Image 1 (spheres, rainbow, N blue to C red):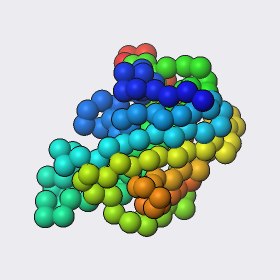
Image 2 (image 1 turned 45 degrees about the horizontal axis):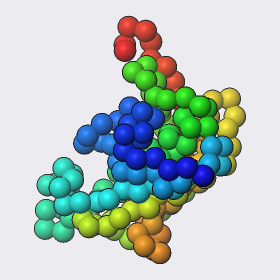
Image 3 (image 1 turned 45 degrees about the vertical axis):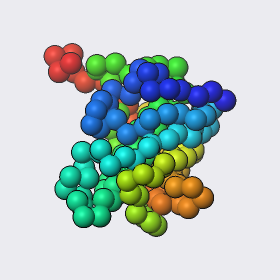
Image 4 (image 1 turned 90 degrees about the horizontal axis):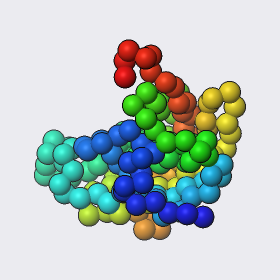
Length: 152
């Protein structure tokens, strides 16, 4: 099992600030699973409006952080890196559940397990935890596509 710092993560993901939501990969095993970390700070741009009096990370961004973690696992499994033509799309999100808010100061641990890969569709079981408490979980389906030549 290996780990990745932010420099290596940025080679696997096309996302950049303010939408890069994975700070560190703690461990991963290509074709199997990955554990990553998102440090949620008060400096996150979404806290200006969600909600200034009680900063809560939007649930859709928790799901996005899990999907970005899944994307890293997909690219690592394929032995490929993201490039200007690679786009990682959601195909579906099932069984999404939010158990507790994620707030400024939380270290959100992202756990993603590859459950299936068939004909370019990747399926994952994902969960986010703060400490020992599960804050969110979802089954994710994603695919990697290349943009048309003139779109890059």
